[in-house]
Length: 157
Length: 91
Image 1 (cartoon, chains in turn red, orange):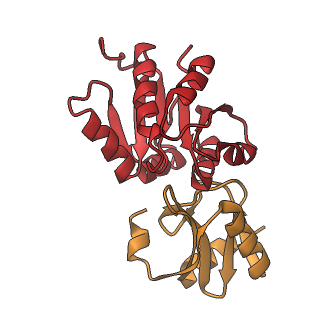
Image 2 (cartoon, rainbow over the protein chains, first blue to last red):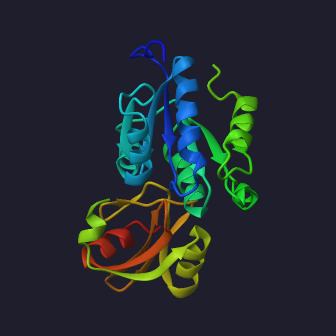
């Protein structure tokens, strides 16, 4: 990584889902890298397991910046103590859709949903709120999802 | 949401979808209120697709609690004060 985004940079919240689908950690690191290269400041919010997978993979914090507990992020945004410019919610199950709808309701961030997994189309059908959908059938191989993200370029101004 | 663990709760539904939990409340409780995501019940900010239904049954409050890996649980907690507060929000 070359350089850190300035303190005044736009912020992007990455809301992680359950890490049971392998592509999540890989795509999260990829997206964090892209966002930082574009001058955005990424913040990760996940449960303990999802966050730990990232923190252990990046011990010198070449990619990761702030990592926070998901419940704390929801509380801070709901209580209007904090908000972000962009929000990416990782979805492979029903809970992920619930978190995305919640972010759409409590945050002013531009919302992107990243949908993956074996049965990703079932989750796509549940998205009935304004957002940009990035979706691909991806479980172990992150490349289909990376390709879908690259087509949207959500890091662009 | 750490306080959920310290609550004396009963699990009414487990590992449900959000829709199943909303349908359960609306078909099993005569009294419920609709709230928006992020609304605070006890110390829990509720997660879900709006509107989110919260059931009221005497002094019991029944609300959805979502975890990323386990889906949505419906929890039933006895608290007369919280039930009264929620009732007071009904139109």
